Length: 257
Image 1 (cartoon, rainbow, N blue to C red):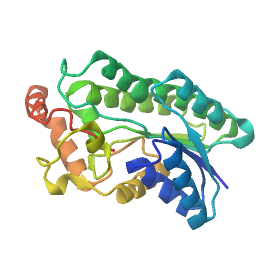
Image 2 (cartoon, rainbow, N blue to C red):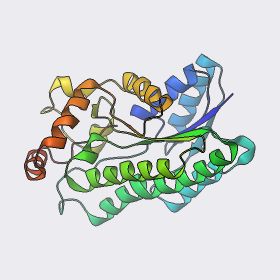
Image 3 (cartoon, rainbow, N blue to C red):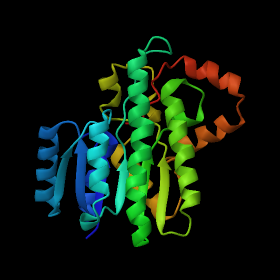
Image 4 (cartoon, one colour):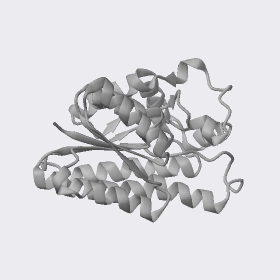
């Protein structure tokens, strides 16, 4: 039986990955900051699907938290076959309205943690000749808007670069780029969602199903939903200056989780 490790596993897209992978018969390593929620989730998934669900409490904004997950990924005796780097958050406010400490924390979680955990997982996967890494980015990666979008653009570029370097190794790399998803993400960031049209909201479980199908097909970048595929097609042909003006009206609400 294969094992998947999911960061940010207790809510939103991470929880949807946990539900789907458990239903498909994968053992899980669930990573988040809240031990109580992790244990409740692990018990529920074990009882419902008969899989083993390991709990790993870690704060990926801290070196010790990242190191703890790195160590689990590097454990050859309990190999991880699929890594889902999902942990992340949004900051409310435009640039200079957000403290530098919060900006740096975002880069720690969105970039440094993704870099280190991908490296820790991919090394063993390459040795075994199989495995997969899903790095959750965002459609915000494709528009010029703030630190959040910049960090997610880094995730996309990083994932594509690693995929090229690992081509032929049996290790699949994919950046997942969702749009607005009905999760706790915006509430946690203190962001309003009233201005977002209903048609732009995605269901987390359907999103995960599409993402896993894209991973199986070997896609390096997944934009799971026809609506957002069409929007990203428009983004490609829209002048960057105009995009900047449009996205500035939304603050930092481009958050997938």
